[in-house]
Length: 173
Image 1 (cartoon, rainbow, N blue to C red):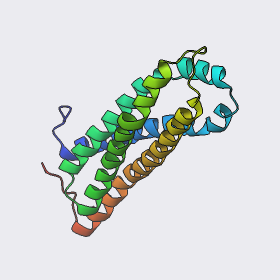
Image 2 (image 1 turned 180 degrees about the horizontal axis):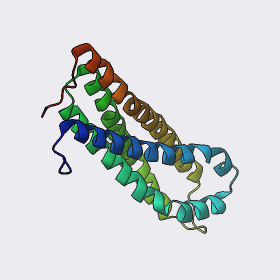
Image 3 (image 1 turned 180 degrees about the vertical axis):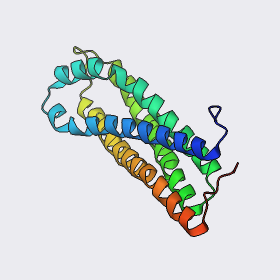
Image 4 (image 1 turned 90 degrees about the vertical axis):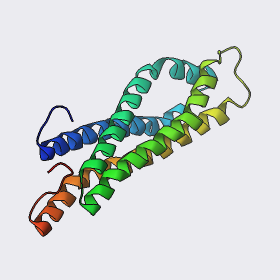
C-alpha cells in the first residue's frame, strides 16, 4: 500500500488516514446536529435559502472522508491479525457503511427533493422532509462518532496484543 515495504508502517499510515477521515466526517455530522435548533426557527423561505446555499461543500468532503474511512478500515481489517484490533478496525468500516446507506436511502432523496423546491412552491409538508433529513444526520453523527472512537482504540489494542505475544502480527510480516 502506498509503496511502503514495511507492513507496520503501512498499518500506521492506514490508521492515520482512518483517524483523519473519520474525524472529518464526524465533524461534518456534528455541525448538522448543532444547527438543528436554529433551523427550526427558520420559516420556509429562510430554510430553503440556507439549504440551497450552505451545503455545497458538505457532499464533497463527506463523500471523500466516508470512502477514505471505509478504504482504510478495510485495509486494516485485512492487514491486522490480532483479533481485538481487527474487530476495532472493522467497526469504523461498518459504521461508515451504515452512514452511506443512510445517505443513499434518506439524505440524498431528501436533498434531491429539497433542491427542486422554490420559495414560491414549497409543499405543505416541507417540515416533515426537513425533520427526516435532520434525524438521518443525527443518526449519521452517532455512527461516525462510534466509528471515530473505535479507530482511536486500534493502536492501543495492537500494543496490548503485541506485549502479550512479544511482536506485532501483520499479514505481510
